[in-house]
Image (cartoon, rainbow, N blue to C red; front, side, top):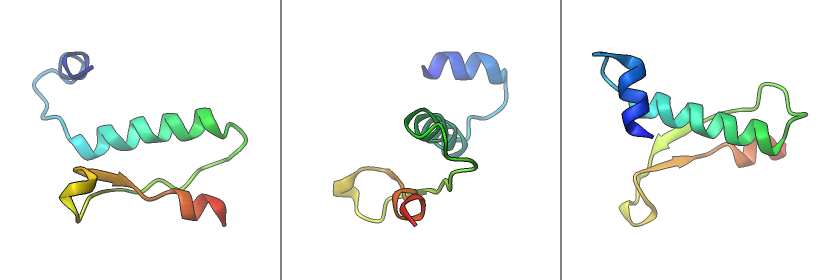
Length: 63
């Protein structure tokens, strides 16, 4: 919840990329609990029709 994040950070500016990395990191850790230090790459999407950000960790995790 954005309000919770804002209240935790006080007056600090919210870095959306860091927040998304945290969310994706938790999701990957939940889905693959045995995977240590999973690769985590969140980047702005180059094609707007696919959304604003993308997580490019799947290929690296499969290797």
